[in-house]
Length: 291
Image (cartoon, rainbow, N blue to C red):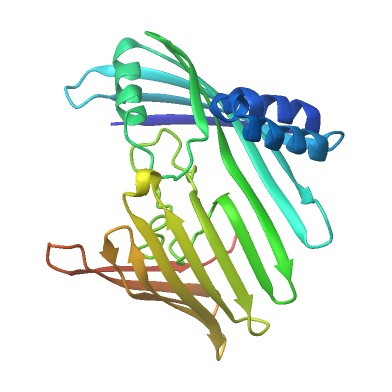
């Protein structure tokens, strides 16, 4: 049994661009030690200096049990600073810096360390631990870090980003690039993927997309295509590609039926050398009248 209490506080104008640039140097010590890396950080600081940074603070209290039945309490506190905006006529940036401190009992911290020991699938290492004590853990990272280039009907986005394909609300068979991590403390968080995403708009409601997403140390590469369109008021997408080691074609649809929205997804997963299997998802969203 698990009980969650979530408190979110939001605020604006928490910092200036120079402050965020200094935090980037702390978060990426390996980059700051290299001459080329210092040059990149200097350019970023000049670019961000004087810009307003927005942010929010989130507190999550988690009371749960381990598999052996031992109760534990975790108190997670996360500060997120975000800078989004134009850096030219055809370019925009999305930088989001996270600083998280978790307090908890011995059993809770053991559960947390099991999660932290999992090897991240992102290509770049944009995170660092600065506190690791029996009852306290401190961690900071770049939650998002991408540049978007626009040319006519084509957008090219490079860096750590959210590529959420599929229509499912709680679980989506097509959301294979950055699926929900089932063991994370905050189920609303999505890790994001380090990728190159190219989207070309062919009409008001249609687009084609191509994504290339390598993993760290060249273990696996995700390479996929998506076509999205609208026919007779129904949105649909067709996806095909290789997601890490699995070849996965699939499709999704979403349509308005009276006051409700009906959604559905299907994928055919082919994980070598195991047999192929299908994954399905369907849902309905509507509003209930309140008198």
